[in-house]
Length: 257
Image (cartoon, rainbow, N blue to C red; front, side, top):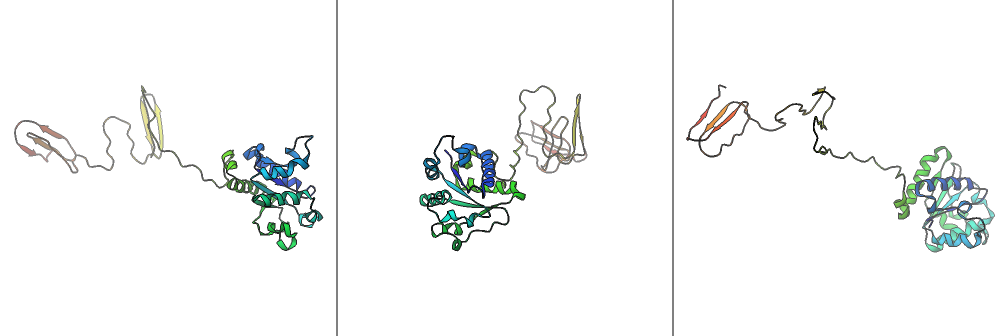
């Protein structure tokens, strides 16, 4: 069921209405947008369809062309543009005026029939053909903010949405036979060829051989031998070997290694 009803006057804003219809249909799906010329099937009586459709909608976009304010139809009870807007007011639907081009002035309540004076108090948006892509994106964003069903159907996303943050690196190699290279905080080049791995211009910890790699941790510096029974705890900056011999109660430090 269409949630957005596009209200416009034939001969003054219909091209803009078609452009909005196309952009929103591409973004949310044509089934969510109602524009009389496109949405009513041939043979349907618009007199039976338009006002019920307004009442079933969740948002009315009122396209305001340069001559819209001067139309005598605004004062006639049987004018469809007027009837559709008043039906939206009666149902409590949000009505969003879309001002066509740069020269169309914002509506003033004093220039409108009393029944439509609320339009002069509503914040409007503008669709400038020289900035149509960005303006249409903003209109779509506003429609999605006002109508949750549109947000759920959004195919492209908001114009101001920030890029997603990069996902953390995880281990993904299982039962691999051969060379596996996992890297993250490496600045430079990593190449593999045959049985060798070459890392060029790197900054950060890189391990391409056998054994352990220490980063920002305490490790052994200087020979320290301990012989005796029980547990030996070695801490500090030591470079060299650690020997632990069980049997006897003798401890010896050898710093000449």
